[in-house]
Image (cartoon, rainbow, N blue to C red):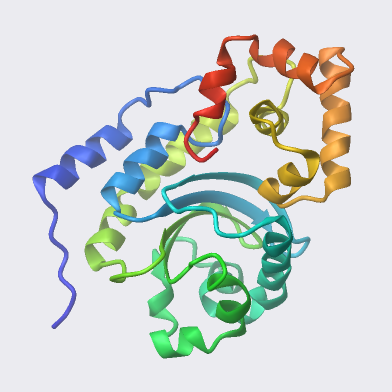
Length: 262
């Protein structure tokens, strides 16, 4: 029997909340946290990831995540998994589909490309997806450029696949999510730091080391050090503590550490 789309009143209310003004309008992240939380509620899943990367240079340009899944990898395991991801990326149709075809409109599921048996036989599954519990995935792309695609990824560690209802709701929300992203992207920075520098400094405030920040943002550790040098220069400080205090003050520390996806 074909998968039918059924939209409930609860779905409609959740969608209306998503397209309304976010409750964290002034936060520095690429999307409001309230939007990611709303999407996780609407599309029941363990993790929602908002990401843009340069597929040729293997560099993450922006990243944001909200997750109920428990971390399962240590730093070395994550680095190994990330190297495997890039190694298999162009040979895994469900990953490179928007880059190869230029189709950024279709909402795709892993199961559109592979049966469970085919998925489990993939090198990408053995070396990456299995390690990060990526059993079920659905992808929504926002208007961008093939090779540097802006993506919302929905993950389930187990259980049933994403449905046509899930796909349909995301298709309807796509223009509103793009508007929310563009609004954040086009607004002037309220301080001397770029959004990327604020994102990095937020991880410093939580207590992450340079190595952990590099892992979190999928960049090289020397790049983290260079970013911090620029932050120190802009804020006219000489230490991590001073940079965090100058950027956020004393009060935001607890709020920063409790932010979703931290």
